[in-house]
Image (tube, rainbow, N blue to C red; front, side, top):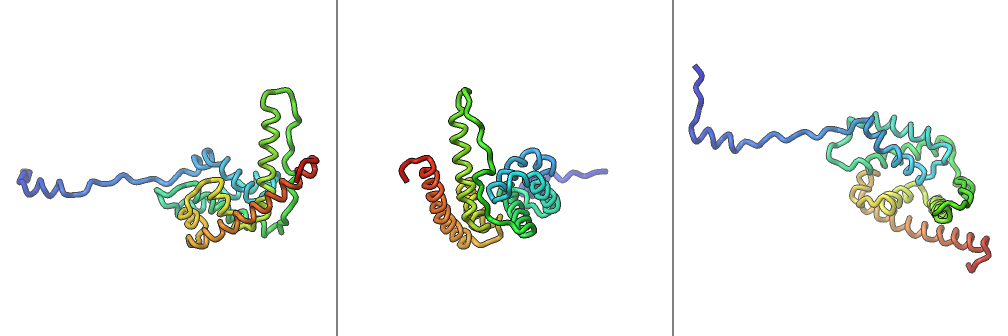
Length: 201
């Protein structure tokens, strides 16, 4: 015979027990690849990988993501975590292939002007993007990573420090120096472009 304890004390004890919390699953690799491929590709480009090398580099990043997935902490932001992995793969790639800072002026071809609406605007946008990539070449990898994460991806500094495995003060110092170097480089690039066009310096 089953006896049900319906006493007030028993009811109160059950009510005080915490409800089980739903578990937060780790992201699935296929979902990450589908949703974040473009982000990883753009990040690798901003970190200095040449356009022609991006497909292989991005593949290497997702191989590393597959290895690192068991270490992912559910609840943390995915993109800063992906950036940290991409950054380390990029640095290893550059060391392996003895990367040199290069002139990016011919790396991205511009579309020829046509009569389609917005063609001039697209060309201007591409030129600005090329200038930004060229200015980023003036930064070393550590400053470049913090600068891209904060200024382009708008990631908070605390998350940047965690993604890059540095303390917050170091991240802020790299950001400050990176901003200064980026501004100087961009000023030189803009002045050069104006000289070529015959405009005022």
